Structure formats: C-alpha cells, structure tokens
Length: 461
Ligand code: UDX
Ligand code: ADP
Image (cartoon, rainbow, N blue to C red; front, side):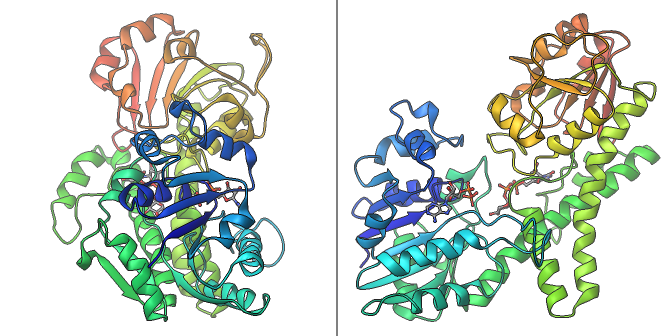
C-alpha cells in the first residue's frame, strides 16, 4: 500500500498529474518538490489564478487538495525520505552540446534526481519514470540507485504521461490508457492500484519497461507525423484550390484514419513532439538504422519548413518587404489553453519576421512579456518605435492595441477569443491595404473580408 508519494519536478507534467492523484486518492499524501523556489511559491500562492501553469480546471483541483494531501515544497530530501513511491518528473530537453547534440535528450536532471533518491530514500522505494525518456534510461536510473548507500531497495517503473497541455486535467481524469512498464510485479500492482482509484482496470496496460519507454516516443512520433502530413497537404490545397478542412473532414471519416489531429496549422510545437522524434532519430542512428532515422527526421524538417513558409507568405503578401512595418501577432503559446511557449511555432515565425525588419506587436491572453523575451532571446523595445526602427517587438495589452497602425494581423495560436474578433474595429485602426494571416483557421474570414481586409488562411490560400 502506498501512503506517501513524492514527485520531483513541479512542471507541466508533475504539477497537474500529482494534483489529480491527490484529488482522487485522499488517503495518500502527495508532495511535489522542485529546486525552483519561485515555481514552488507560485504553486503555493493563495491566489489560485497565479499558479505557475495555466491549465483549465487545474486551479479548482489544487484548491480542493492543497494543504490537505497535496503539498508543494523545495525540501527535496525530506520528501524523498518519507515517500513509498517517487515520481521523476524533471525536464529532459534536447542536448545542445556534446555527443548527440540536437537529437539526444539531456539526462542531467534525471541523473541528479536519481542520485538524490539514492541518497535520501529509506527502506523500500518504488521509483517511477514520468518524464519522457529515451529507451533504456531505466537502466541508468537502476544503476545509479544500486550504487547508493546500502540498506535500501528500489523497484524502477516506467509510467509515461500522455496528457496534452490545455486539456491536462480531463486527460488525467479520463485517460485513454495508463501505461506501466516494469519487471517487479508488486511495484507494478502498487502503482496500478493508485490509478485504479479512478481509471477502469482495462485501461491500465502493463508492458515490459522498454516497450513502455518506446511506446511514448512512438505515440508522439505518430501524432506529430499526422500534423506534418496534413500541413504538407495544406500547402498543396493552397496551390490547387482545395480546402484542407474539407480534405481533413473527408479523410477523417475513414474509421481507419480517424478524425483527430488533422488540423493544419503553423507547425507543431510543445515540449514533446520534436524532442521525442529527435530521440527516435538518435536511437535509430545508434542502432545503424539510418533509413528509419531519415524517415522520422523528415517529419521534423517538414515542420520547420511549415513555420518558415508562413513567415515567407506574410512577407511576400506585403509587397515583398516588412521592414519597418508593424505586424500584430495574435497568440504566442504553442497551442490554446496553455501558457507554455516551448517550441512554439510563434518563436520561429516571429524571429523570421524580426529578421526581415518587422515591428511586432505581440498579444497572447496567457503569456507574459518576460516569457516572450526569453523565447525570442531579444528584449522588447523601450518606448514607441519610430517608423525607421526595424526588427523589434513590443507586448500589446489586447488585439486592438496590437492592430493599431499595423499592416497585418497574424494569428498563430487558436485561442477561442480569436474566433470572435471585431473585424470592423480592427480594420478601422490598421494601415490599409491591410491583411489577416490566419495560420489556425480560427478567424471569421467572411467578417474580416466584409471589413475590407485581405485574408489568407492556411490550407485554403
Ligand atoms: C503532446 C501529446 O499529445 C501528449 O500525448 C504527450 O504526452 C505530450 O505531447 P502537447 O504537446 O501538450 O501533447 O499538445 P498537443 O495537443 O499534442 O499539440 C502539439 C502541437 O501540435 C501543438 O502545437 C498543436 O497546435 C499542434 N497540432 C495538434 C496541430 O497543429 N494540429 C492538430 O490537429 C493537433
Ligand atoms: P515538464 O513539462 O516535463 O513537466 P518542466 O520543465 O515544466 O517539464 O518541469 C520540470 C521541473 O523539474 C522544473 O521545474 C525543474 O526545476 C525541476 N527539476 C529538475 N531537476 C530537479 C531536481 N533534481 N530536483 C527538483 N526539481 C528538479
């Protein structure tokens, strides 16, 4: 029986996942720890609208459990010592230097947290990999745990998280499946019994540990491939007069294909897809499977191409130059209903436009200026830009402010509010002839045209 859980890493995965476990298992004490004291104090903020992660429904769950059986703390060692089960939910970004740079995952945070578990655990502890990891990482974790002080025992499981940001709480409360990989039958059943509080037994899948790790990479690679596939067809639709929404609907009714994940857009973003495919590419290369590596690499390349294609489309439509022109960017998060900007297509598209000399006015309902600064790697311009200034950006408080004096509005995130923009008010403050570039097919194109704007939509032209 598990009485006490520690989760190392209070991020987009650890935070929401532990909140839902605490909500569904009131008899289990759940402590989420993080080295980042600012993040932990934001999780403990009395004002639930200031949690570090925006996710619909999250504040309500945290509000119900925090202080009861859900705790956020920087006391990593103590929380490990009193836990029967430890989730490793730390960041695993793509390596930026050394062997495998640009492909392999950087496992330094996994290694550090495994060492912390080895040093501080007491008695028998189940260690669960929650972060998405390359195949055979469990072996590394086991080796580190085995090298720790004597008198402790460990069971290592893989339990990858399939939640998508923006729908994390509903995904966690009603998962398609929970995957548990491992060899130690009693540890597997202990973890399964936690999920058993709310997940139907038939949705809890048990596999060997390598299958579990590889399944996560494969699921993300297949999903990302679907997006690159539909984005490639979007370009063809624009060239031929077909409409990618109609094509998506037509193929989505084929039960073998299914209707989800067929929305063309500015390219996929988020912390998982690109990283996981690159992991797969690295793994294939390592095993000498070079054709397989190239096959998956192409999914990433098509995604990069889609992002650059959208920036080029904007420039080409604005008479081939955006130097010194003001452009309103609506949406910076990698998808709607999250404040996460990791790998957001907006980053590449904005950088391309800045490189072309544009003055960007960026508005996102949940992303603040500091986050945009970090993502773009450039500070915002101070004060109002002069007409001769080029290659700079500023945060805008709302779409109307962003559009004021702009030659174009570029929609990059499918925030629901962008479906009901007041196009006549926006058009009235823009410099004519003015454009709308809708990379998400969310805008009311008819209303925008009626307001005198020229409109481009992804997958339609
Ligand atoms: C993904 C997986 O869905 C999830 O199972 C895994 O655990 C983590 O990675 P996430 O990155 O949070 O989740 O969001 P997801 O909804 O998958 O979207 C990823 C990207 O694809 C976003 O940029 C989104 O805008 C884009 N996308 C998605 C499309 O462009 N078209 C679609 O039809 C669907
Ligand atoms: P994810 O999307 O996978 O949840 P995040 O980057 O949002 O990734 O969260 C990972 C968190 O893990 C970060 O807040 C980071 O500070 C934390 N972290 C990394 N290593 C450790 C560690 N050794 N101990 C505690 N927290 C850690």
